[in-house]
Amino acid sequence: MRHPQHDLLQRLHDARVTLAIDGNRLRYRCPAGAMTPDLRAAMADWKPDLLYEYHERAGILEYDAHLPRTEAEALAGKILQEMEVTK
Image (tube, rainbow, N blue to C red; front, side, top):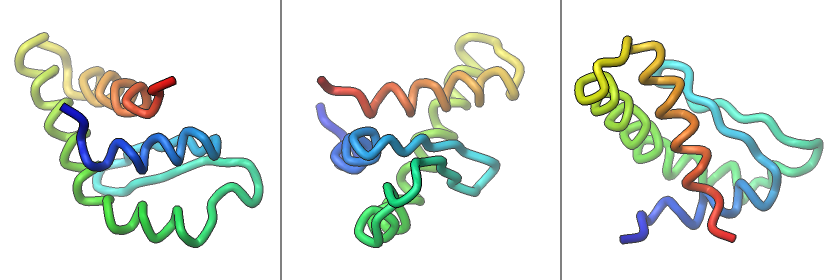
């Protein structure tokens, strides 16, 4: 099943935008000019969903894989980034 925020993640990936989660902050890195007003607005709209997905995955990894929270969060961030790639 495709998550609704997946289209945004694909657009970010195509624009070479890299996401990072810092607590409840959504951070990004990208080449100059890659973050268009449209992408910025879409990120703001989907921020709660992206953060929820990240924290949910981190919690599952922490519990099921018995990982320390910091490791679970790092792995959850990698999984979130991998969700971007569909090609």
